Each structure stands twice: as C-alpha cells, then as structure tokens.
Image (tube, rainbow, N blue to C red; front, side):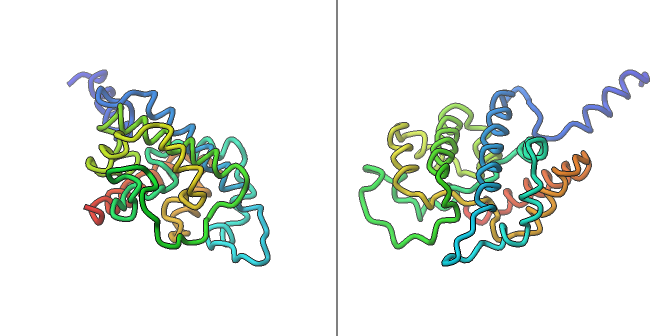
Length: 222
C-alpha cells in the first residue's frame, strides 16, 4: 500500500462517525449546531437568574462558574455535539398526548413539574427547537434517532403535525424544554470544561460519551 493511500486511510479512520455522509446533509449538522448554540445561550441566561422562592437546579448551581465563563467561542465549540443538547420529551411518547390523534391539546395533562427555564427567551428557543425537530422529522429521517433520540414512530407522528400546531405547543407549554441529562451534572461539567479549554481530544470524548448516553436512552424507550 502506498504512503498516500495509507495517509488517506488514517484520515478516514480518524473522522468522527457523525461527519457528513451521503445519507446526511451537512446543512443538518450546521442547523443542529445553530440550535444548540441558542440553547446554550439560554442556559447561560438561566444560570444568572436568582429566585429566592425557587431552588436552583443542581446543573446550574454546581456548575455556576462554568456557565459564567462560557463565552461565545466556548458555546460554539460545545454546540458542535452531534445531538440536541436539550430534551423536549420526544423519547417518551406515552407522556405526550399532543402527538396522538386529534388536536395538540385534546385532553388535559397531569400537573407538570416546575419549568427548568423561566427567562423571557424560553418560548422563542422552544419554538426554534421544535421547528428544527419538525423539519428534521419530515426531511432527514435517518438523522432523527441520532440527533434527537426519537423513535421512527414518534418521528412520524411529529411529522404529521402542522407547523402552527408545533408552535402552539411551544407557546402553551413553557416547561416543555429541559437540558438533556439535566440530572447528570458530571456529563455537563466535562462538556463545559472541554468547550472552555478548546482541547480537541476532550471535546471528542464528550461527544462520544453523549452518543453513548443517547443510544442507551433510546434502548430504554423502545
């Protein structure tokens, strides 16, 4: 084997599994990074909120210094994860009656938990996240499970809704959006620290770890 061929083979093997391939348009990855960046900005805003009557989530309280130090460059690096950094409950079909037949709010939900996000931009970011998920479910079915951890059945249900219905959900359920793995503070600590340092190896390890966690979550929801 020639040296040029060996060099090309090594480069190919070093390429992350989620780089653009024939089945995945590069625009989908770019759009995911843009959505993730907005979500990270929202998390930074929420980390600065002080509400005496409301306990702060451990994800914000324990990582306060990291959130404060997450500048624009660090947010861009963290946003390049090959999965959505927030959770909208897509993997829990049974708890989402709005995805069933009929209108989005055709029945009352049980009392929802206190919303994680309370800052004014929450609804706008929720609309962005849901619109991205809707477009992905309708046009990039191969990426839905990788990026969102969404089953094929749930993706089909989401794709069958209209965009106004999706926006209705975002505006009517302010507590819908939560950070992915909000109860796993070490996962976020490693990601934020790697993003701040910019060390490629650390960032790559965080991305692989996230994919593993997302795959495990998907298996549990099947």
